[in-house]
Image (cartoon, rainbow, N blue to C red; front, side):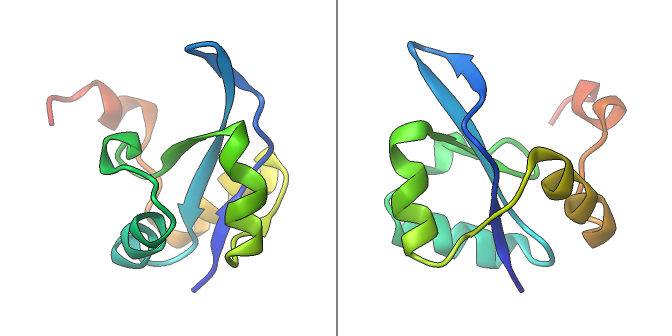
Length: 91
């Protein structure tokens, strides 16, 4: 199991945001996020949105920095990816 993080490139709420994902296990992702003070409200079906200010600390805590393309590729390969179609369905 590997926790992956991409570059903070997505603007919202006055900052840039990165994505934090697991390549195999959502429970492990939730534990990693909780251990690093990332609030559960940042979870969006298959990833956490994390502010740019948290990226270096998450890498220091063990997340592997990858490109956005690599993050998506590995999320799809894991079977955890939630598609755009699935996102439109009610939770």
